[in-house]
Image (cartoon, rainbow, N blue to C red; front, side, top):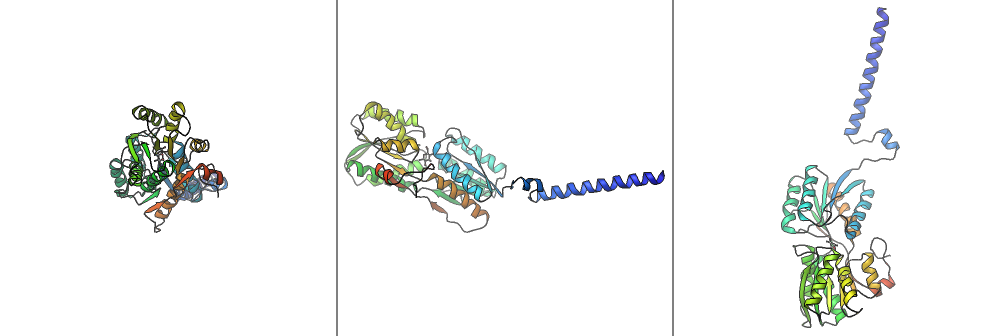
Length: 336
Ligand code: BGC
């Protein structure tokens, strides 16, 4: 009997030790970020990095292209990209998302650098806490961000001025509808535009109005301009939905060709309006590539590679003629 009890006790002890040992190894592997055999068998690979990408506005189709590029790059580099920001453009909300990302100690923050006086302190706070920050689409050059990936926005505005000169022959009363008046990409574009048309005395800028990056407000502001300046010859819209809003008003009150329109970006509706002759030209950016390269740059930073501080993505004037020769793909990029 005594022997039997001893045997049972020893067996129970051995089994408990084995279970304890297995569990310890399991937790150790998890802590060291090794995939467990079951996870590995299911094809799951723990991401090597966790980034947060903060757009100006979550559901804006232009930002969805940046997200797509970022997520494609994330697949290649085994990173996880969390796309999170304001539902509608809202600076306080934008800053809140960055604060939350800092608090959860993500591996990197990729953010639009809009409204420089407001975004700069929060970018600096992230850097101070050891979290790398890359600006995308809009730079915050006075901040401690490690790199900027996106259009040279002053140059993009200059191109819009050049396009306007081309279609009007250098003689026009023009109004600008711009995404926002806060210091950032929109104000850089307006500055570039003004400089480009400066040497054409026939070009007169009669108004600059903000659209809050919405199509509806772009239409409202374009309508107000038409009432104030019935002899207006042209509009320039400096954010992705402005050209569409401006054109909606022109279609209701004017004939095709009465008023010239220069737009921004290559969203499908803008391309259709160019093809139908309502928009003369657009300034084509490459948001997909901005997203892709910002993730790639962040991975390089974390791997201690040398990076360029300013990575400009391509930007060019695009007309109906260009669209005939080279159609665009679903990412708003020219097909090879
Ligand atoms: C700008 C973005 C902006 C978007 C709004 C783009 O042209 O580059 O900064 O958020 O328009 O639709």
